[in-house]
Amino acid sequence: MLPSLLRPALRAAPSARVALARHARAIHSPQPLHFDIDRGLGGFMSPQTLRVVVKEWQEGLLERLNEVVRDSELADQSVVNTIISAAGSREHILAFNYASEALNNAFFLSNLTPDGPTRGPSGSLATALENAFGSLASFKSAFGAAATGMAGQGYVWLVADEHRRPAIVATYGAGTILVRSRQSRGLWAKDKILGEETAAPSSSPVPPSPASSSPSSGAAAPKPSHPLSPPTHTPSSSPAPPNPLGATRQFMSDAFARAQNDTGEVLTPLLCLEVAERCYLPDHGVWGRERYARAFWDVVNWRAVEEGFAKVVERRMA
Image (cartoon, rainbow, N blue to C red; front, side):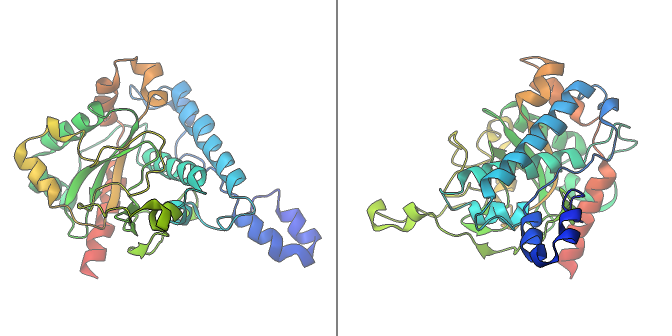
């Protein structure tokens, strides 16, 4: 649906409908939360902090994204396709950063509930977590260690690969799990995020950065050896570790690290925790990241996570 402020223009100027509709598609708009900001998220996030994350941060990202893609080839693309198209382009580094952060932040918020978990994971998801991590407690411990041990800011994800195996993946800065080894390899269990379709080719090539194919660059950039390695071109201004699991393995057993190496190439996000000072500093303090990560489990909507995993299972069986 078009934003209401554009509808009168479309009715008043029929001859310009095509051009205006194209421009309208470029207007990425924040979607209302499925719960009241003023309720906050219990001991995890106060109403004041939640307002910063939802209003100031999310709306600011989308406003800036709309501005930088205006009159460009990205102007009529969804947020997901903007990430994929801009991942290999130095020209569109800001578009990538804004789009990726907006998508990650929106997904983080989509699996939270102020009502607290009435239960833990159940069914096939519970079984998969127990098979991969030994127990739900071990999974939570590994997930929390990944968040606590992260250098800088980013996101810690629970994902499932094409074999329905769950894994923990960390992305840094504006990093994404949509693009790996210069291929679009991420799938989304939610049909819509930010009110936009999330469907994208699961293995389409990412346009190369000019620097990676230009003769002046000396040689083509090496292909990462692991499907979870970050893309060759890292849009974030801060350097990424050679492997997104690098900051977490020091907290995990050797057996668990070996299991993570078996993760497939096509990843579907099920749940993520945003690890950034804007999220935890106001309520938990400078050294409160560990407490913030523990409180996360009190607001996870496991029903939504299970629905995402069910789609992974259906896709595998299709």
